[in-house]
Image (cartoon, rainbow, N blue to C red; front, top):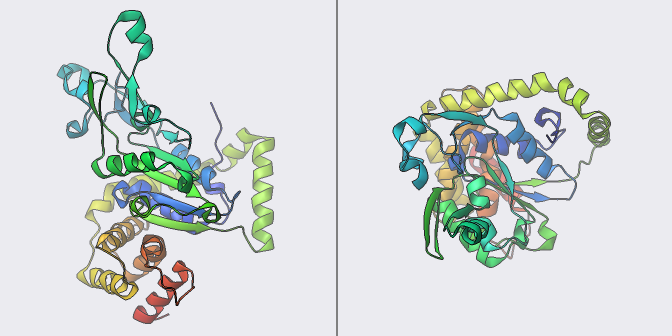
Length: 341
């Protein structure tokens, strides 16, 4: 089994870690886009978070990881099973599925199982990457270089939470609900606006500028590579604390109140920044509620809203040819103008 760098041992990159935790608490936030320099721990953080989360209950024998407690989201195979079979569950790790840039559409959505078709003469479906990612994370490195037809496909599935395959005499429906994580370097090209809008949060990661952080990152990585088992054991207690925090936040997030004043603040901020549509306010509300739940708070405060404002809005700003300021700085400036320093 591959050993994964502990989430709690990641030095710096606080905005990225908070965004990932918020999305893990409430997947309806809509995924996380991580743009920035190479070698700044983007993929490490995603895999570390998935390894941190406790195993999930799945129906035994289900190829899509259906939740035995959520019949409304079952695949067609589980719906056709006797009730006695759907109550048999097992624990499975939270999946992290990589979507490579060169993947074919069949590899992503699934296709006819050619081996069974040739050997047994049976038309059977071979699940694709979307099926394997159900209830977990779908990770796309260099997402800004993804081919257009795969972008269109992902937009449809991300919106519906279901993958529908009708081809070669097959008709299959299965759940495909996942947290979409994209990473990339903005210097290598921009992301299509349609897909960009599907990400709930967008964070920017940079190479650490202070000497102490750089040294600590190198020291921890070297220690992990020399003896992964000992390093993981060293950080086990802190990872366990974060796991308990996420589990508690998941259980309480639905009961966290969002006062009308906070909604007004969110709407004022989006109006000041000129964001299109209402997805900005919705994401702000959900992300702030998730962060409040992680803090153990019973209601969202302005401080929570400030924490998630830049990740929730920086990728939704219209370009201003007269203002070359970075989008994150524009958000922070608007917050200061509206709510004070």
